[in-house]
Length: 226
Image 1 (tube, rainbow, N blue to C red):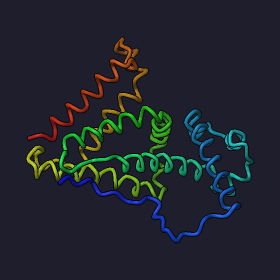
Image 2: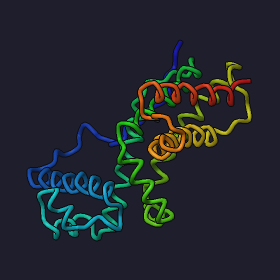
Image 3: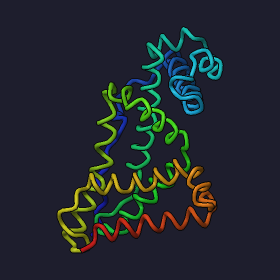
Image 4: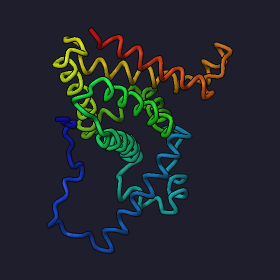
């Protein structure tokens, strides 16, 4: 019998939960619009270059609404980072992974991370900018650790299943496997422009992207297999 990796309800919704009213929906729409606009502005100009007036204009809102919903520019930037981590987390939790097929499921996780980075380039640019600030903003987040835990747990469950089935070796940390996958995918995509110039190759070509994805899969499997 095939057992799937346990899932959770991120929203913790109850069938008896009260439906939001018109004002609540309007407030949420305004907040979401500001968050989307801030994501684009911060991804383009970074935290230092992203201005509140530009964000409010892009959101078709007002400066005072940003301060009302988020408190400050820094709190808005933290909210943007948290939102990106949330989207990553929810998308990964939606994967259909089977503990009876740990190797194929691990390949699916690798493919997911690779594709998510490509579909969400602002995620990479935002993280690059935050690393320039030595993570001083995201370190103030109360949710960052909450979003990272499920990602590690998924790989941990697959590793444990693989060890039981004798297709993976014991003693390999799920955290290390996660970092290996993230590092190889993130570095390639975040540095592809300079690396293309340095190596004299078009690392953005479909062939080059497919080759690297295959290389990452092979490298990870070589690491975890007996």
